[in-house]
Image (cartoon, rainbow, N blue to C red; front, side, top):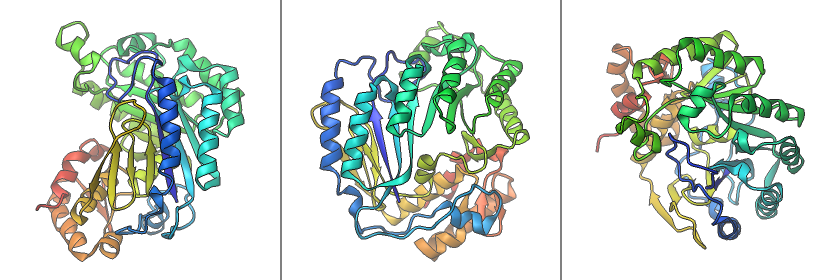
Length: 402
């Protein structure tokens, strides 16, 4: 089991809060597509490595033991001696929906010709509302795209204007109607909370609209100021209203409560879903599953090393690589798993990475549990909704001390 990520670096314009690598122009599109296709073919053996230092843990292991939630995951994992089957493809960006249907089709066909793609693979495409139309969505369905992640961000115009989005609230709703009419049922949207243009009442209304559409997945993010972003500079110059951490805490509490009331699982800090409808691609990152990334700034992971492409569009994508030590693998496991409701599996940690890591982790966890910053159920260390906002700080105290 493995995944493929394709980074499409183009946008119509740069959103004020965005910190991802993207270009507000399509001038380099043809050069990018040529380099992308060459990389897809040229790196076909990347995931064929037998050098795994430990087996990636799948959700079924945790759920069978912990039984805190039922995500509907089935099956088990074994380490193949040749390139594994690809179970998830994810078009991210940037704005992947700026590519034409023919261009996306060419990329998909090349990947399917080069890699072993599972028949029921999850194929996700990120899209912005201003790039969607009924015809475009129907074209995606014909290509086999079966999951959409739409960057709504808010159903209110004042929020969208503050964020520098190109669509309005009417079009945000319209594109969801179109997506359903085109036959998409696995739809996720992004919403941003903690906005100075909003309040508790407006945030509740945003969630009302989401739940009224009966969508299976929500990604909700607190507004953060990225270094050198347009919004950060505007706030520094006094041209935009500053953000308030208290607003984000308030909205996060509302979000968790509303999600629970509507039967949604809070399975990762920023992600909520109906049972069995989590993002399989993103979950593979949190469970240490190998994946390969194509395009500028894309990351790859083969189980023992991490590789990332330089954030630049050229005729080829230059890459940098880091071999991971057992201690670094442990730190990554702790950091990623604490972001999820599955948490850290001490029994798995002992079996797959060694007793010194499981003992170290459990010993360093005890003060955090006593302080109410970390929770434990049998062999699992995890964070509650309230604790999850501080996951990074808790993870740092569990990291390996060299």
